[in-house]
Image (cartoon, rainbow, N blue to C red; front, side, top):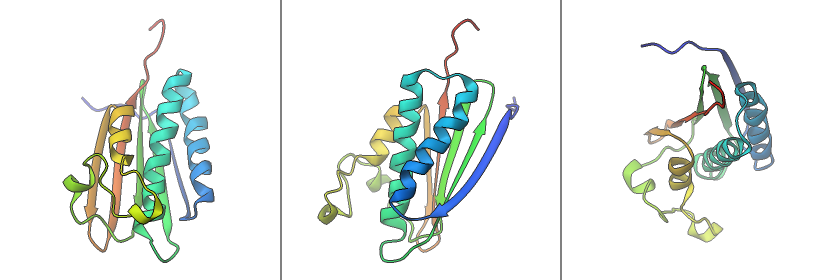
Length: 146
């Protein structure tokens, strides 16, 4: 069964740390159309923050690049895609292991993917070294009285 799209948004921004907060707020405002709980919004904001931060820190380590954020609303779900055209991930399975980090010198915890997996219903990571990474996350919004 194909899900019917209710609404969709796309934004692009420079891979600068200051834009991580912008991405969180933009997605939170967009998903509010589905009337999520405060906890659901917090989970989504945290997951977007982790995905965007990964792009900023890992995709473009010594240069600026573009981070793309796309969100699609369905009747009871949001699908969020964060992508970049940066360095890519060499070993996705290893990168998804809790506490794994390639940036220990930056005091990174290595918990980004673990957090996304725990806060969202689905997480898909696609990456090609030298071409970039795309993270797709889905979150069901539980409705009262439906």
